[in-house]
Image (cartoon, helix red, strand yellow):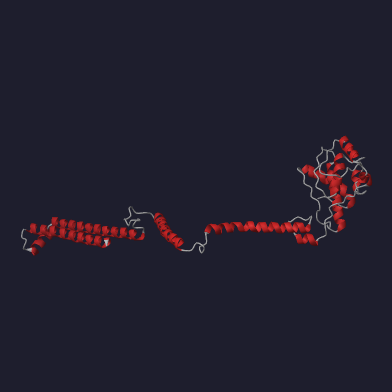
Length: 328
């Protein structure tokens, strides 16, 4: 309606402008002729005068200018009406919008209006419907979050069951392969009669004389190389020594029994052979039992520096050579 009114006003303005410009031109022509009734002679007289031609030209130019202004006003009104129809034209009370908004702001207002329109309907549905029939998002989210926990719990129970069933095997890795493969030989130690004959007082006196402290193991120290059970091939690496060093005396028995050992001793005290000879005895036992085929490593030694790794490799290479064992 507003657009129609503005178009009518523009048409009326254009008609008025054209009428007002033509009348003064005719009046000027009549006045200059001096005879209002003689239109033909007057017109020819005006057309012959240069000033009359200039006046007519100026009048036509002014009329065209007013017509352009009227058309621009009509186009501006049409654009304003189009923007008002595409954008949000009223607020909550139905009032007209203020200044023209950008495209992003119009989208934002449209989304807010849609959300506001959906909120009352959702509230009405919740109030009118049955609570038991409507799923609650929060509970569904909690259920979703609790599913992995339930799965973890069941997985833990299964792992515990496998661990209880297999005994010494851990609940990780390939359980089927562990069942089908030959069992690993963990213990290669058989206590010598002379070692077993030591009394608790003898062991305490021996360790006190060597300033040795042992915790977490009831095994007695191995005082002689011949009591270790390594055999003559492995003991060739110890031919230059008369008796085992303190760290070797205390570590060989628990290490060859398959226990975890932490040994602390000074540099040059024989630590390499303290763990190296039990490691070579372990490899030999796996080869004899068919657990290892000799084509893949069976022992891993980790050292803090390259120099120490090279030193350990040289010592174990010499110790394992009589058994045909190599160090990479």
